[in-house]
Length: 210
Length: 261
View 1: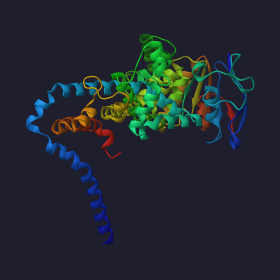
View 2: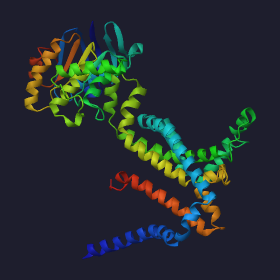
View 3: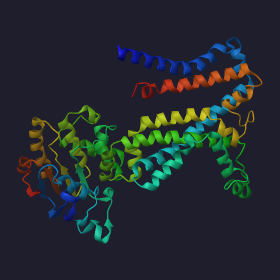
View 4: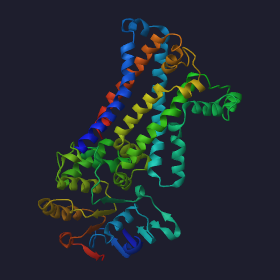
């Protein structure tokens, strides 16, 4: 079980050629300054941006291979994303946000809600189910985004700057929470960050983009 | 001193604009035979025209919503040039003289029409001069208003949320119903209200395609027009009803249109 990306992303001066493979249970950190194409890696694996050349492969299945015209659309890729700007659905409660991915995968409402509630508890958000994202602090929103990604038990977890949108106190708390949560996560994780402290906290292998 | 003078002249021009719009509306209020209002409103012909108007315009607004919202979605989400040509076609009825719209509908769906001849020959369906024709004319004229309002909302809404939903396993149609529609809901409500108001006031296309048959296809605006030469007072009363409904729509939508945004 693994995810690999071998190919070219971006255009012009943002063009990058990458080659990496991550196995289950491993965390790969992709670091680099702003504008170095870190987020593009995440969006490419998630299927929101097509590869220019090369391929994205997961467990032997081609997700994106422009040369052989193979393409798996985002909804059919077994990965989950924590976006840098979180992208919580503002018109839904915390519980509905987290349950959304389960419901799209055909899980019935009761089970989706009970699984979501237990994941919310794992990230320290018990009793937040009925609130709207707008009623939460930055750190709480970040946890909802994390719970939303974890609840579907993805094969690949894609974290785009998961600690950038929070204040210093929440950042410290999340740095403790993330390794703990990832410790019990069976799949492969890709962490995009500009902060080497995050890499250290997550004990991740580091792939630098310059 | 100079800027004060120019500000005064701007005020005068703006005042004239207000008076020009408000005076005719107020004149209806002044001249309406208030003492006979009840009797006139309870006349059968008045009630029939009002009912037909309400029935057809509500159906037209709902049909506009059913087909117009998906159309707005495709127009908003596609960067293709073909679709921008499609947009021009779809909103043309907004600027087309309504009577030309009525003739276009007759040419397409009349008994000799491009589609209408087959409807008649094969299924014995004749659309012109029926209540269905009234609804069709109203949809033709009103749907573009809804499409434009909703398309603007879809364009402004956050595409990132829709991408996020895709990565969570949502099919494009699920994204449409669970993310895009709720985000555009205020614009959809406003669009439906706008389409309804436009349908209610529709005259040119309807009278051309559906005719003005009392009790069958005659809507309030048609009744107002026909009464003008026969019973001016009654046409004033019906006009008053239409003014009230229009002002009612504006009042219901005041948060959107009157907040200066």
